[in-house]
Amino acid sequence: MKAVLVSVFVALLALVEVSVASTFPHDAAISHRRHSALVERATKATLRRSGSRCNKNASATKALAAAKPSTGATKAATPIISQAGLVKTNWTCNGMPSGASHKITVDAGPNGSQDWLNCGINSPGGWNPPKVQLKDLVVVSLRDSLKDPDSPFHACGPYLSIFEKYAKQYKLEPILLASFSMQESGCKPETIGGGGEQGMMQITREKCGNLSDVECRKPDYNIKTAAKFFADTLAGDNGQIILSVGRYNGFRTELTYKQATAARFTHCCRCMNNLDYPMQYFNGWLLGKNPYKLKLGKVNNLAWCPKES
Image (cartoon, rainbow, N blue to C red; front, side):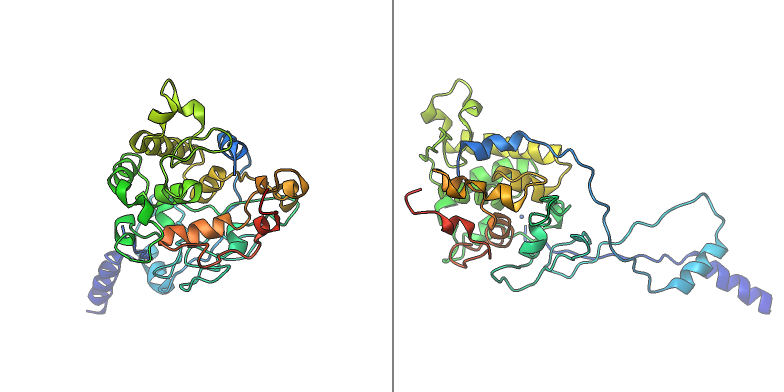
């Protein structure tokens, strides 16, 4: 009888599946030099991702391994630990975790702390952007954001269907594209940049092809072209969204603080990289918040520049 009970117990253990899963809710989603920098590609190997393994039932796992025949060596994936409403990641910046917080502060928010987003900029090795995919970020729906009277995206409202159309086509989030437009032009289609950049997405002139400047600035073409360009950039960066967004604003891997602020004492002070940009973008715009109204970012290096520069 005891042998029968043991056999039944082992058989039941063979049916046990031990899984570790973490849930992550989604609500749905200055210059010619800056845009020229987008064609760069990361050439360095990525840092190993670090994290802790979760296993709250080690004894059951051992029993299961003993009960089942081995079919070859396997290695369990490191589970990505996340709290609901925070960036889903176990990537650390030289041992420093994301520092994500539900409350948005001057230097932290749901998509990580500014020190984490700017990882390495203050070191000799330069910027080493966190390895995060778009699906891991906390974003809000552009459509839902526009329902808020205090939304910073009301200027983009007339173009909502265009943002949604091309975000869907290129597997992006509408608010991601609208965030670029707000940062670049305030979502104003007639904007012309200092280097000849065109339209609400400030695409460089060569992307207009044979179109006139007026045709190039039309919202449908302008948004479509920017969406495709960013999607191609993101694919080239292996889906590393923080790196790709940084590129859109002139960041690059290994960018140092000294390099980023080198233009401070030149005739083009505002050609400096905005070192608050990652914080403003990921914890402001993508969450439907105005980063300037909230005064996001603790470096504030563009404030060093004379108003006329």
